[in-house]
Image (cartoon, rainbow, N blue to C red; front, side):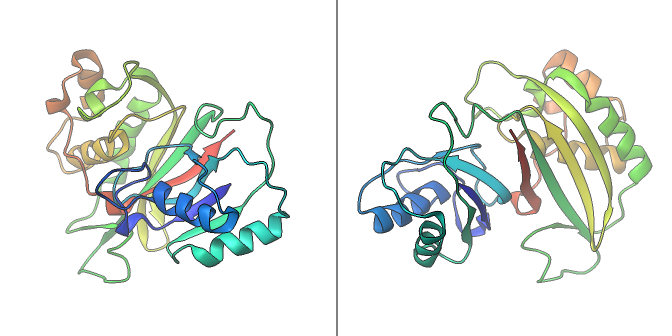
Length: 238
């Protein structure tokens, strides 16, 4: 299934004992339609408050329901901030997470006074970003590196080496958009990289800070972890 969601009201994707999550809500919706408990496996563990324009998940199901009826029925029982955009049958060895070749994330900023129509999906900045300086920092991230220092202690994997294939920052409509693609991401990796980019733009950090973080694996050398509201899982590559 291809889904999209506004993550504002949810504590991330993964089911948790004392918080409402996207996965739990989706599974409850499927139970109403199929009258059975079926687990759903997602392509990523997005953080609390993070959004997704394109998120994929899979489930094993023996029911033979036409796609249109399944989509119509499931969307009718889901809240308006979660939508199933498409669904299709895939080979039995397909895995939403492990079959993915890479992901693209976008983080949005905007300038000026507080805008209630933008605050939900972007971080407001009091001053402009130096796009040239920030893009120099972005270029230093492209390649295969150990991103341990660009992740939080809650990471659940031992291998912290990732390959960033593209990274840039640019103006798009009402937003400044930080755009990054990689074969995978660590816990809070994008939000820490974005915070570091802001530090570079505003002169608090050197342009070559990424090299120092890669070499030392020292989280304290990187920037702050920016809030989740501006972050979108934008695309998943299979």
